Length: 410
Image (cartoon, rainbow, N blue to C red; front, side):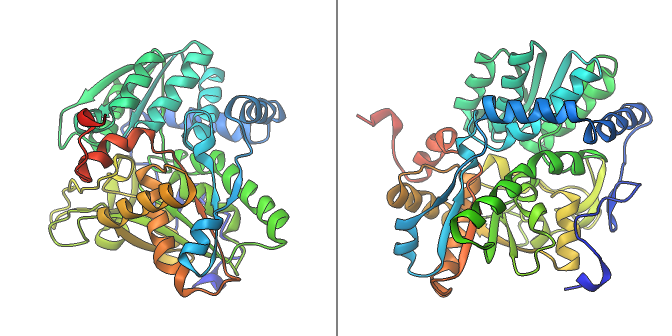
């Protein structure tokens, strides 16, 4: 690992918004003034006690933080090896980690005088969180969602509309998260005066990757303190699923300088990492390029055209990854692996049966890797994984893949 080149892994990005050779700000001239204004507002907010007072009050009394750190004792016993803990961010209001970041961005939007919020969503959790916070503050909300994801995430579509959001199905491309983000960016260029783009992951042009990470690092900060209280030490391994990678960066970032902690990100392996690109494992099967305003690892063909990718999980179905993850991968501070749909489905079922917790398909990928490695590790080895979302939204998808007819459930 090339850690001798750095005093700290927590210093990025640099002034140009880059983590090594990744990140940056690749946007149109129309958007540049908005991006610069956002950067200025966030730099001010970072040192503004009143901003963090509002955030902490809402995290506590609206979101329900801190989320618990849970010892999965039956799963640990079943696997027969390492001790497994779950950081239970699925217990947040709206059922995922997404609201941690949405609160911060919408507080900034209000300070900037924006009255219309747009967002992209894949699994729908970011869309639900955005619609929720917009409803709380009385802001107009428009959510772009791939038409394919609208079909497989119907419960979340209904929740967004119930909360007052306009959900716009995107039919271009394969109708997934990439396409939703494309249309959201087009909207932003067209409506620069009153509109704020609330990005849901650690991707996009600077300052979004760092800003979203900073809002999500509450996960890792809590986990460090909770693990010290529970075990008197830090975990040996931390694990999280990765699409764009916000829940993972939220867990990873506070641990980056703790050299005894192994960090593992789990990408969506789909039907297997192969030449057909029936997966969304950008680090495992991709190469660097530019998409959605930043340079990062992407699934692309020989001509640099972005490929569609595939995953059973709508939230992981993205052909890229946040630039900070790309940097951590290249310098060796974090390890990135992939898990297939089949493995994630098996982990989903095992978690239900052993712990009485119905996980989302996204953290089921992280759990699948825990299931792989825990039996081979000593009993005093501690694993902490991020249970970043609950599975209500995925029951129809899981039922279909398991051959269960929901219409005949009686």
